Image 1: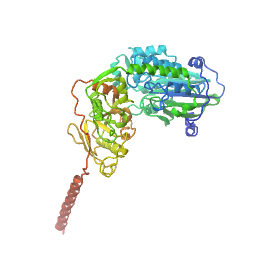
Image 2: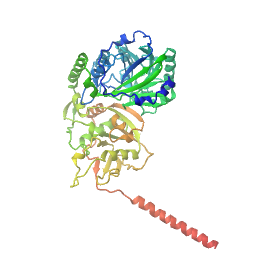
Image 3: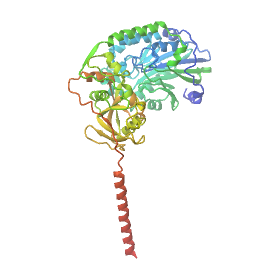
Image 4: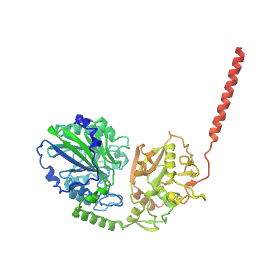
Length: 563
């Protein structure tokens, strides 16, 4: 199969399908009907595999958010007869608050849509081993957890491998969850769950699937590219994997090769669905393949299954009632300020402080675009928290250098402009503007972009060397900022050191804190007229001149003695 893949490498781009092409609508048989018995091979076949991952409770089709929802996923699957629908994990979680019936609700939707196979992510496992076993019993689809084991004999918690026969082609599947996640996501508290070595488990699964007669071997991985263990390493170290459907890092990828293995990633929150089409010829030889990345606009051409739409809406209505529950009494009232996109504000400071309180980081950042509403005084409901931080992404820590921090801040303030009277032009405000905690920044907007950050001083009194590319500082922020979106691409290459609760949960816990809050009213990003200091450069030049003169004097004296 690898030799075949190598011959079709150049065909990938020639055969790539448009995600906005109109598919032919057709009802889809149930998973059981599709996979109940091996079909004979007719001599040629096209097999379509549909993949989702990291949906994180975004169950409803939503144009504003760009989410497909399970009704949209079902519409895509029904438009592709005999397609296989699989998920890479993190489907049993909501964005922030988990209602009592969340697991059953998501499972009912996935069963109704017609999933064939699902791996597990770390967020799913946090429900506990017993819940996951109950999910497996209720699921109408197969579940894999190849390197997630339990018990003294370390047997797979769910399934290890699975072959699904489609049109006579044996598709072999296994799953890998990044073992590092046991130490960074709270899984260490689950003493009956183990995460085995990724590469060794993967190679064993590949060998097993080959013995079972798999024609194509596909790995469902929940690894990503941001930790010390990466999906690229798995592709490079394990022989025999034809395709990898990856997840966890939320980075959409329409197809890239590591060696002869093609890696695909649909991103997160149900914003995309990945389609892989495999075309086989004589003797089950893979002749070509193509990829499609489905997104919300394509749904306009597809009929919706009203039963699934109704189920989505019913769950959301029940969730709305659940979200009206009061969960905190706020001692502060911080309205949403209009200048949050170009100025350090109390609301932003307070939210950034909540990140520091929840983690072990030294500094915190949150982009203005993540904050959508103010904090009310008095009673605070779950709905309030979600309105303040609607995306409520997971908090992560990375160790970054002062130079990288300066680069990120420079990028974040690069679009700001001054009016003739010297004040900031509100029209130049940006969603990337940082609200911060744990440090102070001096910015001079009169300087050219790239030269505006004049000083960074930590709250412990240390002033950072802005050219220092060796020392590291632990930064906490949401997963979107740290993955390099908007102005913060410099942070993308740094590995994730730890992962915590969602932003919303951190804020809720901080509001409920009994101790006094640190001062959140001070402007932590100060606009200043300070100019770049050239004192150090001038001193260096003068010292160099003195040394050169001294050297010349010594040389002249030596020459005089010789003569």
